[in-house]
Length: 60
Image 1 (cartoon, one colour):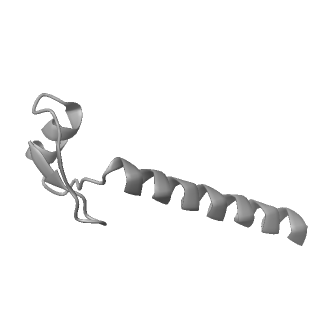
Image 2 (cartoon, rainbow, N blue to C red; image 1 turned 90 degrees about the vertical axis):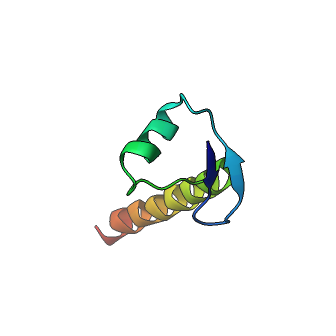
């Protein structure tokens, strides 16, 4: 199955029998992100949450 990343618009092939392919077929609201974009978003989110926790502790 060919899928397109919603952020970088890179086209990838995923296995037709994978769980991700099944989710994309059955629920069109689900979107696909390539591994590079997913890792980048995860790192930035983790950093943002860590800085928020640091600020919360500082306010006490």
